[in-house]
Amino acid sequence: MTSSLDPATEPVSQQSEAAGSASTTEYRVLSVSRSSKHNFSKDRLESVLLVEGLGIDGDAHSGTTVQHVFRKKSHPAEPNLRQVHLIQAELFDELAQDGFEVRPGDLGENITTRGIDLLNLPEGTLLRIGPDAVVQITGLRNPCRQIDRFQPGLLKAVLPRDSAGKVVRKTGVMGIVLTGGMVSIDDEIRVEVPDGPQRRLRCV
Image (tube, rainbow, N blue to C red; front, top):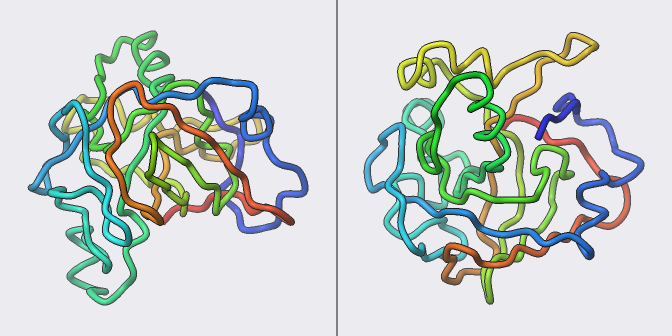
């Protein structure tokens, strides 16, 4: 799905249509992935264990402090706002129309969703995934040039500009684990947007 939101910090007065329809639309986990190393892509699995305050059990990005390779060198004590990476499967559908072949886990996400316009959810949205797990959305993923090493030209495809000329970052969202639990393929996802003024997602 295409988002026209600029990742600014000003309050959002109304929740997005996607978030507001959470009670009537079925959202599902299409795939789950994990890697113990800082590889670009992750291995697809049947299920993964989310651990409160850490992330995906056995994943290289799990931890209370930042695990991003470059950020860890410069700001090792920075809190880890990227414990879980989620991408909407609709992005892969769009990319296929442009001639790219991208499958779940290829872009390094842990959870691939179907039906949710992740990019338009406000900051702080809760995703209740499966019977127990709760992930709080912290912000947008900011894609880097490694994407072009995976498939040439892909970076431009996931960083288009909207009609106003603003960059649209399509490579999913990041979150932290508030409540742990197993997450498996085809698990239901329930969306809870925060009360009060809502804030657009920024890059984290």
